[in-house]
Amino acid sequence: LSGSGPSVELSSLKALIASSGLSLVSVLGRGEVDKILLREKPRLESWQKKGFAADLAYMNRQSDIFCDLDGFLEGTRSVITLAVSYYSAREHQPRHGYGRVARYAWGKDYHRVLKKRLKTFTEKLQGLVYGKEELRVRQFSDAVPLLERALFTAGGAGFIGKNTMMIVPGVGSWTFVAELLTNIEIESSHSFSPAVKEGQDCGSCKSCLVACPTAAFEKEFSLNAGKCISYLTIEKKNAFNSWEEQALQDWVFGCDVCQEVCPFNHQGIEETEENGFAPSNGAGPWLDLEKVLSISSKEEFLDLFAGTPLMRSGRDGMIRNAAAVVANQGVSECRPALLKLVDNSGESELVKKSVSSALERLC
Ligand code: B12
Ligand code: SF4
Ligand code: SF4
View 1 (tube, rainbow, N blue to C red):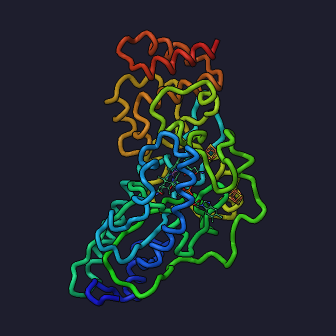
View 2 (view 1 turned 90 degrees about the horizontal axis):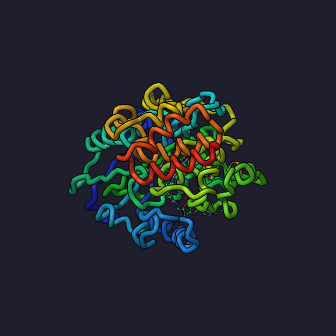
View 3 (view 1 turned 135 degrees about the horizontal axis):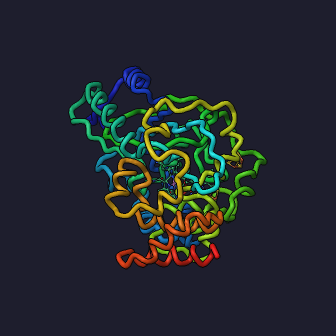
């Protein structure tokens, strides 16, 4: 330790974590984080080289950027990683005329929910630190090219499953990850969470690899994003090709199949305590396809979905997804809504192309 950075008593930090409702937390020293990132770098590079990042420009950036903590916070001395459950036990079976929404997107946008929590936590942390330097902190969740799952699992509170999800025994994989980069000096790393038992992992299970509807796993621990329904419905900007349209099945936003089949998600896990993630606070588990196709403007889309993760696809992307699902399910009741879109000269190429293809497939 240099002795000049801010410090914090571990017992006070532990009390703060407990009182902030953050149960799955680890604090990692800079040296350890650098080691982890260096270890993971070749895996990231091999994933990128195979083209598995598809058109995700932010994931195709130089691998060095993912491993340089100073690029995110100059003088980072420790990283506080945390996970928050969003699990909500609602039935999620397919329904004719409806598209399924992945569980992570049922309620409010997690970026906003976590940001608020982390802000409160940081303010309280400020009151605990002492030393010559001021506390400096940057908080992230799914916002920068940091290998968040590798960082979190390094704290020992979870492990990476073959479906590439981070699994916390007893909680499952229905969690969001976030981290605080700080200039706090710590002597060694600490986990404030129930740690994974030595050697605990997927064992011989392969359920997720077999269940993935698009065969998006090249092999265990390796996901080709371009084939994943989550990527297609949320991240892809252009129109679908015919394989992609059908690949969606009835998923209109995201996909949960490789998590739904996971035994770690069935072992008496508890629902989230975060009310913001409740289905009643957002889009919920299904979208009525006819209603989606009737969203006439970006403003109307905003009125319906502002503050939820569904904003990411935008109105036109969501109509593209809904049109594909309508054709996959043979929802002929939606034909008038599709015809109206195709006849509207003001619609984008993306909408026109997606809707025309759905009409052809409905015949
Ligand atoms: C790009 C991205 C995607 C892409 C690609 C996903 C992927 N598997 O790479 C797409 C759009 C497909 C996607 C989908 C989803 N995503 Co996403 N996504 C990300 C993002 C931005 C980066 C992930 C990444 O680094 N990929 C690069 C590859 C190389 O990394 P990786 O697959 O994680 O693999 C690492 C390890 O598995 C390890 N590894 C590889 N081989 C081996 C072998 C062994 C033995 C071991 C132990 C480890 C190991 O090496 C890799 C490098 O560390 C993160 C946020 C972040 N900044 O980390 C969120 C994140 C991973 N996504 C998240 C979520 C919620 C989802 C979805 C569940 C959403 C949904 N329901 O539709 C799906 C899940 C699909 C899936 N099975 O992964 C959460 C996951 C939380 C969790 N509990 O794991 C994250 C962490 C966001 C957050 N902050 O909460 N996502
Ligand atoms: S989210 Fe769906 S499509 Fe993507 S890997 Fe998992 S099961 Fe396959
Ligand atoms: S379904 Fe089986 S193989 Fe896949 S992540 Fe869960 S335990 Fe691991």
